[in-house]
Image (cartoon, rainbow over all chains, first blue to last red; front, side, top):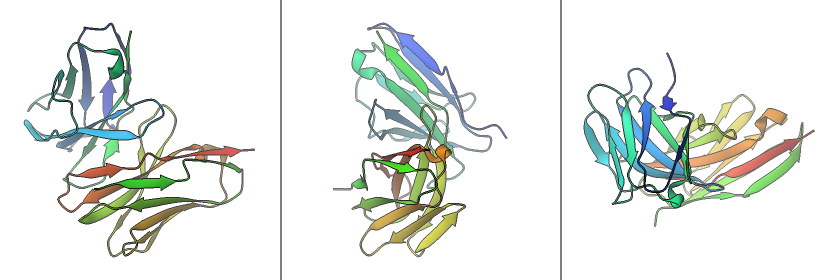
Length: 113
Length: 112
């Protein structure tokens, strides 16, 4: 059973471009969580999704950021018109049921030039 | 305000020594508390999970304790190894299940 997979592992964008981060949860997991980790800081919750539904997006900036978890395919975190402050590591985690242990992916490191 | 605070912020110990990391929380209503280990450049990996009724739980050389009355948890690492060098993160979940509060972590460095 493969773990949580994220791609790309590293992403470089220029200011104003769009960034798309993908997360494939562990097999059998229908709950996906996205976190952002700024350099030298702890993980910050962004959004929690269950298949085709956003359950809690209280940690996600209101503008430029969006997330989806379609019926088929990976979860996508989309950042439009990136700015330098968006540079961070973005981690995805999945769990089989709500409140259960979350299994984290290796992260996507976004660098905005 | 729901918060999770960890101490110390960073710690350096000699290989083979023991150490204890602290986590204090004000999260309510409490469901469970997890300790994660995050190696540099990697995603966090779960070490232990503790519910309200559990006082202590071990996973190899890692032993976690929980005092739900004082809202404190500790992670004790015995006979440290170089591979224990990592950030250790305390995470508290509310009983609604979808509210996770992360501490900022303790950075542990084990030196030979």
